[in-house]
Length: 172
Image 1 (cartoon, one colour):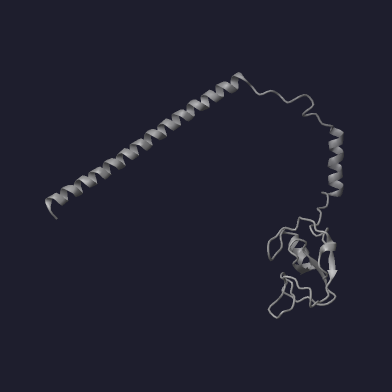
Image 2 (image 1 turned 180 degrees about the horizontal axis):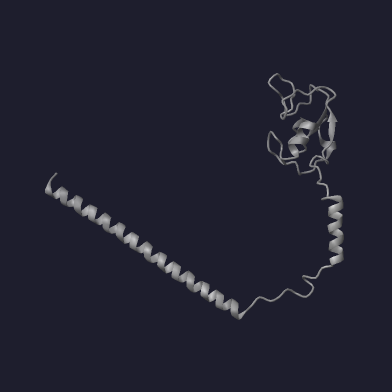
């Protein structure tokens, strides 16, 4: 390496070292300034809060009927919490009838319609449930168990909240 190349390398290393030291010093100064500003802001807010205490709530805000509260507590103890509405309560169930014209998005590998939860084929006369938005078909027991812990279709993840007119659904 020539003397000129060594000088260039030395100057380059010196410039990089200087820039790193400058960056480190600036970050230390910024941290000190932020901590000092935060302390000043905190002191100003404390002084403001001491001069202007919060107003108490309006009269009657905290008043409550002890007797009414006791009745509610007794009712909860006697009857337990109110029953939770079943997510499938508003969804009708049907008796399955195989049809060559009506197909749902539940075809298995062999061409038969299958329940995507248990992977069992639907048999004529079984009770099935059709989800209202995506029109996926399931055994009632399978989908009820699924919907007890989920709020979406197991296949396409569409919600089950939106009501649909049952008369508009295709025959099952």
